[in-house]
Length: 184
Ligand code: HEM
Image 1 (cartoon, protein in one colour):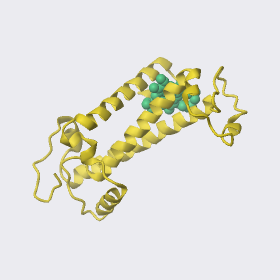
Image 2: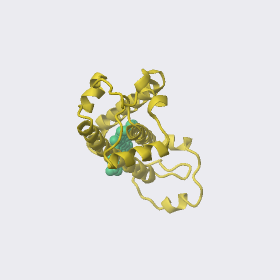
Image 3: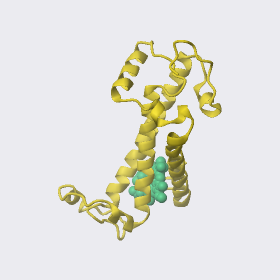
């Protein structure tokens, strides 16, 4: 919604963005206090485990997890970071003064943007320009779309491989009963 409304309907865009920020905040809390399979401590694994899982996947021998598999866990973190970064840069762009709360940019970066004529009155504090933050905002929003596509692809692949509808499991919280070889 926020992506579709960008550059068209400012209010819709900002409200949609705040809804995203609220959902991200909820998921962060839920990742700490939610049930076992919702908790970050349960499903966030190191890069080595994620790579090993992806390698198993390419060989078609990955194990079935009752919670998120290691690649799914990495995707959750990537999506949460991208979404919060997009919402945060959008929020910064909404009011010129908000850029002042950012740490000052080193002089090598700031002059590169000094000639920007981005049409924003009063923007450009601590070495930032609205165009620069707009670019970061847009890049993060596009990266999010890419991650969403990868995520949907991963969900479809895992659903086919393990013969269960993972999208339904995300809504109902129920999965097929565990087999002895499954990860709890
Ligand atoms: C997290 C969800 C969000 C997504 C996916 C998103 C996506 C986008 C996209 C694709 C653009 C167009 C960039 C361009 O073409 O220059 C844009 C622009 C913009 N967004 Fe967002 N946005 C989000 C959240 C927010 C929030 C929370 C706010 C403010 C409260 C916001 C404020 C803005 C502003 C002011 C612009 C214009 C920036 C410019 O002209 O460069 N966005 N957003």
